[in-house]
Image (cartoon, rainbow over all chains, first blue to last red; front, side, top):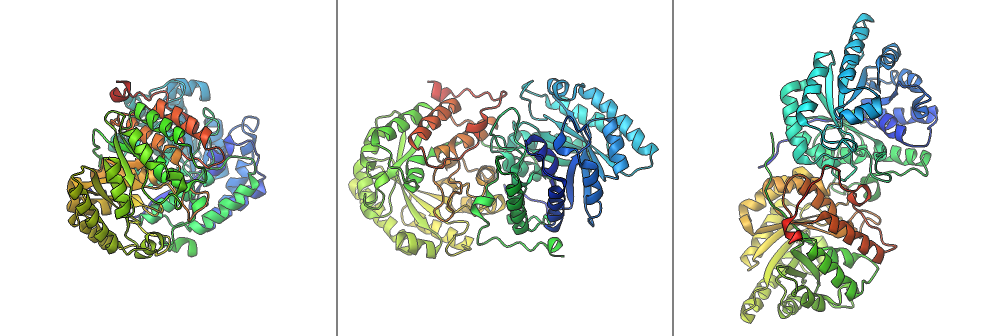
Length: 315
Length: 315
């Protein structure tokens, strides 16, 4: 059976948030601005620039408001941030971010350990965020990101029915969009196909994004399975940064440049200039010396036969 | 669209041949026997133990005849070797190998550079091998392996029509089976799906195996695409050894243990005990210190939720 693939897909860059938050290095704000501008020049149009959390918890992301302000000056860029609670959402609304992603962990054990809330308490917080957003007359969209959707290092198995119940609850509470994340790298392509199929039946086009980690090497195969379901937006981190706190040395997020290569080679338009992405990776690698980077394309280079003409990046 | 997957698949271990031939280290025969025996104990039932080529060309594989003799003592093991020409085929037949794989490069430039023959001269050689096999009354099967099937570092693009013409020619010349190989890591899942679909229409069950390199990170995604076409046998190398002579430092073959994990997690029976494979990987890594190994599972370990009960390995 030959699969059909979408003509276009979006790689949402989350390296500045999901990547940097798990590294020791604190990147200077000027470097982050260079990264954002270069990613934009390479054709990226959706970038998560940081997280509105207390600076004492994540000093790596303390400059998020300044980065949102900078990123908003770049034409056509959708600027997103992560927010764990109402306080963060208020900051995101005030910053003028286009999108705020609210993490919810479908694993109750993981949710209590990481967010100190049950998943349903997060749903209730999303309802308060929506009310605050609407009261402010702001246009910052709310995305509920359902994490540990394929299993959890603490709890073990996570029931797909519970994942889908929470996804529906997020939509009912006022989330504009939802996404599914394999937070710990437990997913395989069969699981991805089965869960995304059911999730799409519930959320349709409001199922916005797939977020896969490459912890056990299946990141791109899982993207492929989601793509075959019709998902056309994927989170990724330049140089595959991100790691997994439960598996030291293990790969992190899917590498943006590897994903851009796979999609581009398949004839799926991402609007990205991979050469520029590889140059940016080299620059970021220089800033992150001593940190473990991932990704495969940077070692081997593009095939001789690879021909991409990204109209957007050239424009 | 939810994909359907086969219930069973076979990982053919080619690390002792495709892996070791590209490393500097020459592994002692005793270590290779330990590897073969441990792979068999982990459930592997198809192992390529070496290549019948002159020892001056590949001193790493000079002990192939002894390894075939040893491997034949292991119950239920299909022992394969690579043979580049009639002389090698005669050695393979004399050794009692179950299968000999004859490499043919669909890229004419690659074929001339590596084999000093045109692809059609290789086809003619296969006809002579078949005659020799039949004259000897031997049961050693002949597999024609069509390499550079998705492109070539020397020639660039390789026409799919030429790949399929050569595959048909191999069958017509007397090959019992054929396989397709992405020798240089140029394939993507869309290319794999399209070519294997056409190849299966020609060769049916005689299309025996897919051989993917992970040079640019797409190895497992390409396996997935072939699996969705109905291919159920894949070459792989323990620890992803193999490399690519044209891209120093780049990943080599798909890592056997990562592939076993992907298939096992998807509920596809490989008969493999992944824990034993990981132990074997650690032992082989000790022998190959200084060589670059690949593969992701060994760093992160199996998920808590992974449960495989390989009846064969336990038996």
